[in-house]
Structures are given as structure tokens and as C-alpha cells.
Image (cartoon, rainbow, N blue to C red):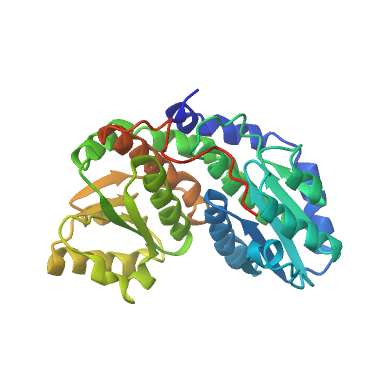
Length: 346
């Protein structure tokens, strides 16, 4: 099974996770709630770190929890364990093998903080270190670039958020529609391959998103770097205007994740300015025709996906774009340069 196969497998991977025992997740959430949690701390690297950014928005908006991203080097390099009092501490890792992420979870558990491992390997060091486990059930992921373990990590976060609300049946019903939503997202592959071929000469680009979709922008940029060897620089559309705007010049296209919703108006205004004043080349990923029209090229997202779950769907056409751009640039998506499947940072 290759990278494209794993991208296409994502609806089934999510179905597998959704079929796992909801009672265990409910018990986990009840135990966490009983311990007076007011904050969440998440340790992660790479794609899992982008899942953590998604968690900042989900737990922040839906559970009103402040979410911090851990700095694992504080523990692994400097030998200091920050206080995790009042915090739920989560480690996210598809392999569960990175010692610095495991170290954060071990330190938090020693302090009595509730700890959760989100991983695809229930026998991993991370799973063993944590008090609770949410298994991704993505199946073996053989490609170096993470795809289905990324989307299933986001699903795990969404399910935990719903469980922390005491079993939000409306949220659970929305989550249940995700496999079908991703199947709709996959139908744009032919159009994506055409656009990727047209952009094969791209060496640098800027990737923009805001709100929930900031995580998507970060993950899209990572896939472009590791697969297509494109120097892709991701930003929140708000942060981009505070200095990085100077990067815009001919030959540096803007890739924007711009679905309809509360964040759309500000990002749309920015894209209008970039195209009008700087003649920027813009690729827009959106579920709204009016927003797609802001780009010189566009990729359609399926409509009707709840905003809080949309990053699980919007990354899928972005993964396909990275895959086809890699091939258009004459590179092998199964052999990304200098990379291995499992990275063990200390």
C-alpha cells in the first residue's frame, strides 16, 4: 500500500475508529472531569503538533479550556518537569515512540495529573506511559508521510471533546458523518492533479489559514515540504499581515484554506488585496463559490461540514495536491528525501 492508497483509505480508517468502544471514552472523560481540570497541555511533534493546534480551537471553543502546547525539550534536555497541576496532559504520536513526548507524559503522571495517549500503536511506550489511551485504529501506515494517522488524530480529539461535554449526542452525530464527508472530498482528485501539474515549477509558496483551519495550513505546508520539496511557509492569515506579507512576489504563490464561516471575511479581504495590489497567484481551497472566485485557481471542498470538524475534511484535498505536485515535479512520494517513518527526538 502506497501513500495515495492511504489517502484514499481515510473514510474507512475513521469508520474503524468510530466503531471502537464509546463506553471507554466516556469513562475516560468522566474520570478527567472528576479531577477538576481547567487546562489542557499537549505534547506532540510534526503532524501530531498540527493536530494539537486543532485541539486548541476545539477544546477552547467547545469546552472552554485553555490549551497549551508543551515544550518537550524542557523535560528531555533541561531535566525540568513543569507543574501540571489542574491540567489534562495529552501526548499525540502516531508511533508513540518519541522519547521526548513520552517524557512529558511520564512527568505529568508522576505528579498525579490525568494523562492521555493518542496513538496508532497501543503497545508503544507512549501508550504504556499514559493513564488513558485513545487508539487511532488507522491500520498500518506504511508511507513516510502521515495522512490517515493525522485525520484520525483529529477525530480522536473531536470525540474526546464531545465526551468531555458529558456525551454530546448532537456532536457525536456530526462526527459520524465524517467518513461520507471525506468520500466527497476525495472526488476532486482529477481536478487537483491538473492544478498540481500546472504548478509543478513552484519552488516556494505561502500557505494561509485562520481559526480552525490554521492547523490545516500548517499540515498542508508540511506535506509540501516533505514530499514535493517545496519551501512552504505557513501562517495564520492574521499573523501574515504583521511582517511576512513582505514575502509576496512573483513566483511565490499563495495557497489559502478559506471555507465559509466566521474567519472567512478577513481572509477574503486579504486575498483581494494580494491579488489586486500585488498581482499574487492564489490557489483557494473552499466550499463557497464566491470565495473560490478570489483565486486564480481553486479546489472545491464539500459543503455542509460543521466548522469544528471541517479541518478533518479540508486537509484531504490538500494531501492529494501535495501527492500530485510531488509526482509532477518528478519526485517519488514514497521516498521523501532524508526522512524515515518514525522519528525519535530526545
